Length: 376
Image 1 (cartoon, rainbow, N blue to C red):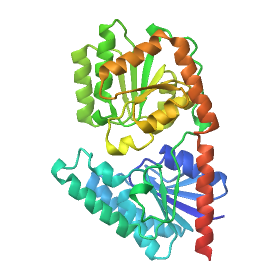
Image 2: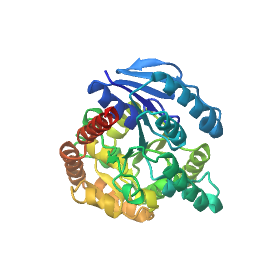
Image 3: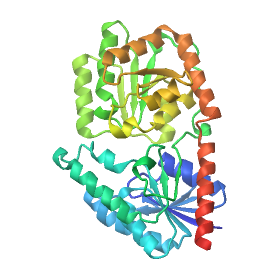
Image 4: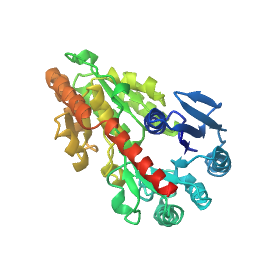
């Protein structure tokens, strides 16, 4: 049995992409899978052996002590292949490669572009930090095969010759199709799942809800996802100011707890702002809403429209215009049969095209190719 060691110092052990998609796919294909991640104990879950890392006290401790601990634990596994997931793990990927190990780097985001919008980095320093990261990536990832999580990434990484693009598409068995039937106005629920921030449309959503309340509509808003304490307070203050009583901020929930909340909703939101990394990347939540059979209201970016309009599964709007968002929500509330049809169209598209079965085959083929190369 071929041993694979997956490493993340940032993501929780049961991250959907890392655990429920990639690790479980590898287990089913007959690999021995070890996962090094922050966890309270070592345990075996669904065939994946979790090797736990202690939770660090802060970001700096994570990027130093946690990363070094991950490296030492990884070496002890003596795996045939090491699959790393976080930018801060690039140095240990380089070291593992230097020691003759086979390594894959899973690129979840276009980091140089993402850094230009990181709120915790001083705006005056973001361009410089972005350039430094570009240099670091070329240095540490030299000759390391890369998995791109988005189709848009490779054009900025033309120096990478050995790669595969594996999209973060849903596992159909995880996301049950829910036939909401006729969606009644007094039971209309708006759903959002994912990281919660201004750049992901949280404020515009509340402003749209205020507009709806002025029109006599009072839908609920079910918001699932992590957010900073300061942003949560900002949202709660805005709810009080707008007298919005039907807003529920769940914070982070494990996938098996968060998805059922959204499955009970009438529509899913993906109102990301026109920022470079968002503009060119598929939000996983769009495909999750489609898989659940609920219509999508999404930003009117060409990439998003290529999915939503092609399959007639939702409405694209200007994400910075609360009135446009409110109009789209009104349209679905006023036309429950249309909302139901849009949701059914989305589910059909996921069943046929946008699902993990397609991507898992690419993952396994990539592993087979790399392991064959390393044995020569």
